[in-house]
Image 1: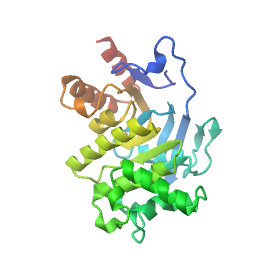
Image 2: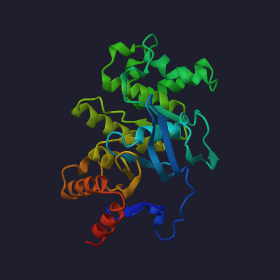
Image 3: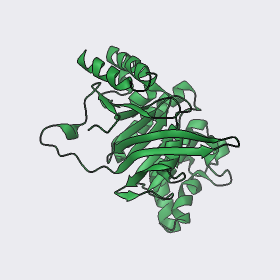
Image 4: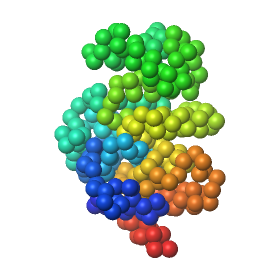
Length: 289
């Protein structure tokens, strides 16, 4: 599938839904020519310009770009915190106008967890606050997802007793316990050391294999995008535009040292920093090569 202004490169061509005999499913999320702005004391800043992409159920879609390209701003708009000045964001065909429990965000900061609540209470909190479950059912679901992220033994611990990686696992368990339509992750591992970051990527993929949630993931790391994503949107420097869309489902943590992975990472780097209007031509040249 190709949207206006997006080159789909032949790094790992499109998804199994494009194979003969497979009908393309309806997208879960549609970002349709979305432009976003925010105001500073001096001026109005355009963060993204006419960004378009579709996200399908159980897909891992990554927004990749340099700092300042608007990828985190775009995630906040999908979450319902920032309305577009142009275009629409649609979830299940309905325009997104406000936050909702069908879209849960995991941020990179470690202070997402109220420090006066235990780990189990932190996971239970949104379930109780939203009225979705009673206390007993919320406690059972919290423990279920803590088991999935390997933290059941720390259910009665407090956030200050946890490492950074453990806090992020709690945040992921809390988000998944709400069973959202889409899990939104804004550079969730950026503040971790390299070894912990790799371990968290591994655990996220294992959790996705088990649960099959739909993921919209923001990063500025090319390697992380290739490891985590099944498709990647490459956003240009400020204001963010979609330079190209890449299929990366063949890669994983096992691929990082091989030649094809490294060559793909180099191609992505070239596409990210191509001049406006040149990314599509570069993609077509590389596809023909």
